[in-house]
Image (cartoon, rainbow, N blue to C red; front, side, top):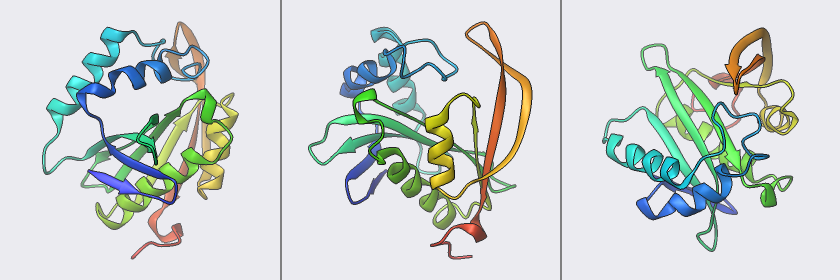
Length: 179
């Protein structure tokens, strides 16, 4: 799969992308609010191999490399249709530190949300994040997502019970929605 925006190309991961993924997800600061610890080379190779092996023409989970015009991988954005019969998808993302604050993840996530509403006929997309993750909150709000709630001590991440902040967006609220 491939989606193209003004500055980015979102595409399926390829086996050789493990090094770029390691540079991003091996960074303790970049994964500070992620559910996983900094990844190792083995982690990245296994992660991408599983992603490649799990693809099918009728898939409901998209985990895409975010690349610049020169082809360099700078992040990852995903949309998992948790319940196709309910038409609900969960959004996630991570971006290399050098690219923070440039609007790249908002652009990438916007393209994937648009795909979800138009092509997968989703009714709703949501994002769950740590309330301390201000960059993720800014992306959610720039996307037009509404803050829907806070679950206190909802998940254990890296040995700590943390709150989960939920944002949601309905297809009828999306500017280019066909509904």
